[in-house]
Each structure stands twice: as C-alpha cells, then as structure tokens.
Image (cartoon, rainbow, N blue to C red):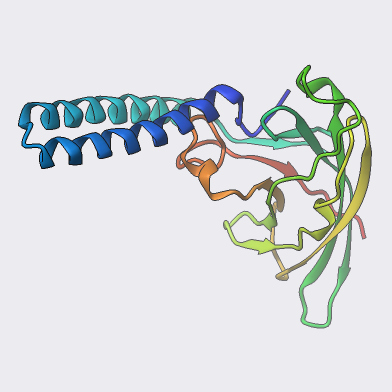
Length: 210
C-alpha cells in the first residue's frame, strides 16, 4: 500500500513534541521567575535533547524516502488517522483552448478503503476528507493548480465515486504528473509525511487522450 506517510505513531510523536515543548517552556519561565537557575537550565537541556531527537528522525525519514510516479489505475492512500481514502487516475482527456494552451480533464477515482478503518470506527460512519491540494506539474516543475470541490464528498467505508478535475496547461508542457495530496499545514512537520521538507513525493502519471 502506497500512502502519504501519515500514521498514528507519527501523529502522536508530533502532538507529544508540541505539548512537551509547551510544558518545558512554561517550566523554564516559572523556574526563572522563582530564581531556580539549575532547574531552568535542566529544562533547556531536556528541550534541546528532545528537539534534536525529533529533528534527527525527521531528517532520516525524509532522506530515506523516494519519489514515486503511479501508473493509471494505481492507488495512493491519503491517511485520515484511523482510515484511508484511496485515489487513482481513471482517465484523462485533452482539448485545445483559445489561449493556445491545452485543457486537461483528469478523472479521479476516490475510494474509502474499508480495510483501513480502526476497529472502534462504526462501519456506517461517514468521513469528511481533510483539506486537499491538486495540480498538474510539468517536467520544468511548473504547477497548474486545479479545483478541489469534487474531492470534498463524504464517504462511508467501501463507497467510491469518480470526479472530473479540469486544468488549463501551457502549450508545450511535457511529462505532466498529477499532484494530489493532503493540504493541512501541520503535515509539513510530521515525521515521514510526504509534505515534510526533502521527503519524496507520490504523484500520478498523466497520459493524455484527445
């Protein structure tokens, strides 16, 4: 299974890092106000060690990752903590536009993978997807963002649907790939998530049909 890297352990590590940093910051301020310099120093040491460990793991997971380009029909799972939504490219059509570029209509299949829900989640409970970002990216790295309204539909486990996403692309754009990912800002700071800096990205190959 190819996922965006989000998992409960990484989320717990991130939450723990945030809460731990806040607690140590409060402890440091209180120690300074109380004139307890040794305690204040200890909080700085503990905080520095924790931050160093987190950054080390962050770097290891990013550097060890790699880019993937999925073929039509191959699925990428975007995690929602206790369940996954699977995305794949079901079809691509192109047409010329008056501006001289091309209009790509990419049909995306969205599936709520019932095999990924936690045992505590009711099997008929609907899921509202988190924020999404979608774009076509060419060989030069230029991005052509698209609308995400069609990716906001609520699903129950096992349910699926297809939606057409339209992109206007410059003439001559080569080797287009579809980027479809989580767009929540905090994912950039989670260990092993594809949105984190230097981490490999999973995109979809786009093969045009007129």
